[in-house]
Amino acid sequence: MSLDAPANPWFSLAYVRDNQADIVEALGQHVTLTVQAVVIALAMALPLAVLAHGRPRVATAVLGISGVLYTIPSLALFAILAPFTGIGRTTVLIGLVAYGLLVLVRNILVGLEGVSPGVRDAARGLGYGRLRMLLTVELPHALPSVVVGLRLATVTTVALVTIGVVIGYGGLGQLMFRGFASSYRAEIATATLLTLAVALVGDLLLWFGGRLATPWTRVGAR
Amino acid sequence: MTILAEAFAWLNDPLNWSGPQGIWARLGEHLTMSVLAVLLATLVALPLGIWLGHRGRGGTLTIVAVNTSRALPTFALLLLFASTSVGFGNRPTVLAAAIFAIPPILTHAHTGLLTVDAAARDAARGMGMSAGRSLAVVEIPLALPLIAAGLRTAVVQVIATVPLAALVGGGGLGTFIVVGFGTRRFGEVLAGGLLVAALALGAELVLSWAQRAATPAPVRAHLAGQRR
Image 1 (tube, rainbow over the protein chains, first blue to last red):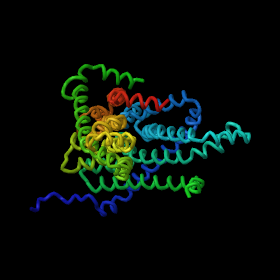
Image 2: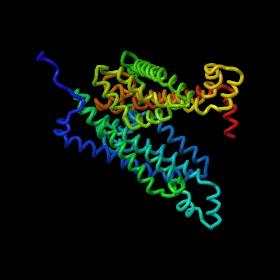
Image 3: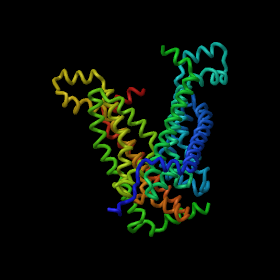
Image 4: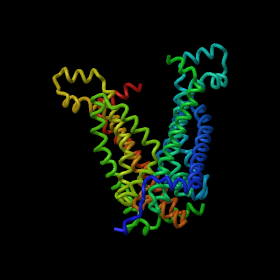
């Protein structure tokens, strides 16, 4: 049988070697999109959570609106955004930020609400004002919860970037789809493994960063 | 704003609603795929979650399942399936959506049974119920709110995943988005996006009501009392 289908392995070092430039470019796009989206989402989530903190009505409104956004499927969100924001990077970024926002607002809010009343009373007794209390007491206390939110947002964002393929900015999703379109298994498998690796590395870095930023939680655990 | 007008013109054209590639047909495909995927996932995850939770084991398994499903893009699994003998189109989508629906059902059922009050379980046994009977008439009803929550999450998630079928040559409402992008008719893209979003939000609404209805009245009263 000399007419056998050509070899189409799932893993091929030759593919990685020959397409290094492509892979690095897609990986770079994936990582920069993720980092940008999470940073922007955090920058928006912090003031929103602070605003909602202690104001149950605002909290319900903020969580409700971001909950509705979160329910909209990613493909549909990109489809709704694209006609207005254009076919490009911005559209993908806006979509990713929208999804990260809910996770972050919810976790920051949980962290802020979780500060024990005793601690707050003590700070107030020491003459702390609202702003000083927020910056030096409440936010540090909320930090572990913020880190959990950041890890969750990062991992889900890494997975979501791949849907950006409909707009042509899907990072590693771009490689996956090209591999699918040309029935090239090695390309799909490599991109998938790299996506998992990006999520894992991001998660570990944030976990480690969180540990460094909250040394007191380890003292308490001992 | 012309694109918005185009989208509504597209939605208002009766020709776009009828026929084998019309909105109604695509909606039918979408729902059929969703139901199949949820059924598949439920068949696997629900008995497993109930059993593991009942035995008080499997905590690590559920955590691993959830974490992996978060990091692995649905799109990647879909393409992996589509490149094998599973074939193009709807079948790999149903399979991928089902696999991603397993973690929410599994973890919710697991937690639900794990957190059943030990006193209630003891009382059931003390009344002479067998383990199976206690499971059926005491533990599962008490875990129903969480089991229903898991199913609801799974259904909404599946409905949100099925549009991806269009990227691998399948049907469903995602086709309008993908075809629209391909032909640069952004009115159709927007209309497709709105349809999919409306379906997902509608499902979420209906199911949150169904979840309430599925919760036994005494449990509901108990939960309301706890919240107060």
